[in-house]
Length: 234
Image (cartoon, rainbow, N blue to C red; front, side, top):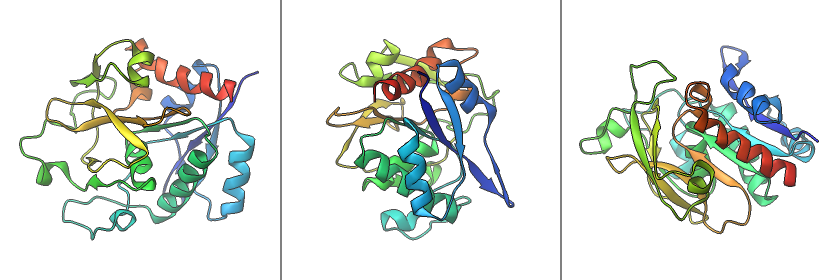
């Protein structure tokens, strides 16, 4: 039976939207994608989690730094309070229920924040000699490599310790939440992936955008296949 995978949608100017790469990748991987709006009603969000088999937190704007105890710095970008509130609730509930969870770009940052970690509000002003993490190349193109720990779920999925990725972010994981462990890094030391420290269930976040890459780099589809497989077993 094909599992249902909830995918959080972006919200701007009174519209919700979702880039096609997310739902096409989930469908290609064998799941049925279900878009989720940033609802205010927590009971409704909880019911959605009851009915789906896995959760994908998509990319998007910055997370409000109040969620990790900081005031906004000059480099902070656009924030979306409705989306932050809904996704932090969904993330915490999914972890509580051990529901398979994949975070992409903003998604990995949100997972870390929701579980007690922090992020750099702006890499360019907080990291010395960073790589260019907002590429001007096509979105599908791999602009730098990440090194993956061999003792990790991510390594078992991708079967490689050096993977080329794209890059579209100016924030990044800083202090890692206790329930998580960093398992991939770019050359400048930026955390590029997190996963469950205990390994009790499928919990993975990546800083790049595999939904933009998988048609040109088929290896990236394995991330969505892993989520769908975990959801099917759940």
